[in-house]
Image (cartoon, rainbow, N blue to C red):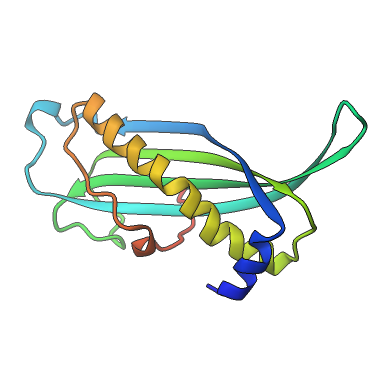
Length: 160
């Protein structure tokens, strides 16, 4: 993380909106939800992609948007299974993709776009993600998982 590059990018952008773009909840079909194990391990996932879009307004003004998609996931697995094991027993998985739109006042360099999207976009989305996890798991009557602090997450490629 380069704070100078992020600071430079921040001066060129202003937040327009944060949208829950898509979400999914999957449960293991062979486990009765009334008897989920007490001791669960959990795993997290994070990936970010960005794009620049231009629109023509009704007044024939060009509006430049810097858009990021922040994909986050958390899953409950059998205690003792680790991240590298292909045979992980998964109890449930919750994923969400947030679309974050910024008004782009000045063009970003490739480095600014990359650093900003990996840090600021995730930072902007994180409170929405935490709320989504807590509400969804409660509504689905699933065991609570601890959403780690943002800095504890490491960007990984999705296995999709």
